[in-house]
Image 1: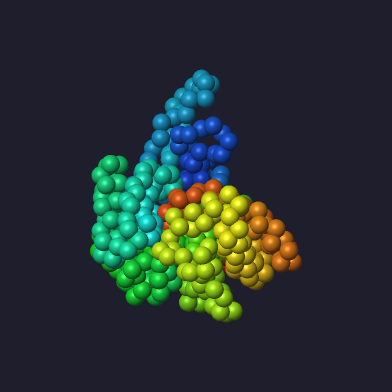
Image 2: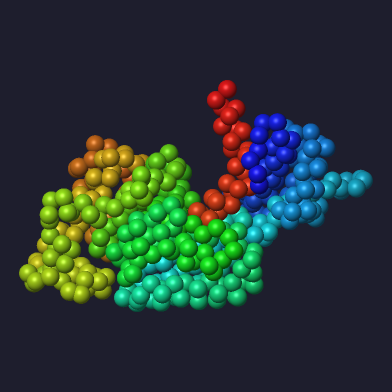
Length: 400
């Protein structure tokens, strides 16, 4: 679409279309607590009332939305009341008019979620992958998972409106991984460009902890809170944060890389910190760390000392971010969040270090957090394209 100017009649049409589509989508979506799972609908009178536009204008916009596939006529609602005359025409937002993908690319697995334009998940696919797998192998697993998911759901690749991707590393705006030490061959990888060859729609690449923060805010432990820190707890923790409900990436996309904080004090490496023998813990992987925690629960003094060091570093890393951002909620996810004895010490120590201790909650989404956040980012992109003009006009009105 070309640039719109104040004197361009297409601007008014675009505004009206966005306003009506927004109202139709809101009327169509099942209301929380209503018990209704099937989509609702709205009449022209309903849309005229909710938008403030004239009935002829609403009718013209609805016809245009139907021609574009974003709206459809709905069956009359049966409320049990008999009425004379022809029932009013009803319309609904066609959430099935397009689909979205949310993809996680992690050290041990890749996962994909498919949704409609309302964000309703229609299917998922997971593929295990070795942590040592090269980049090409990892991307092949992504393509396999997506092909399987689209095949099982009967969704055409051409029907995808946007693809969101969450992965470890510092991500450039164009989807290039500027620095990614968790996955072999990831640093410098043009991930957005590589994945873009497989799709005919925008591909949005985001840091995994940032994606998980978005997910928990959308449908996880941070629903209703706009100042949120999500901690992806692992051997080298990362964090994502929302400030005022908006994802905070930082100037270069490196906000939340709290795993590097120990370098400031030149403290022990994770291999030394979690050792129970005085020698570095090798290979350093999740199974090894789980064994250390299991020994600590049995009372092994060296294991307990190692666990205390692990938790203390996690506390220091998270406290630094909490003191800087003052979030309402800290959500802890990642594999380490499931280890016994992590959350309670974190709560206690944050209460000790922080001027205003936040609520500390465990992720409600678990392993699905990153892919769910990636899906939400894809949905945000599509919503911005559908409703951007309305947002712009609202912002202009608020400044008058």
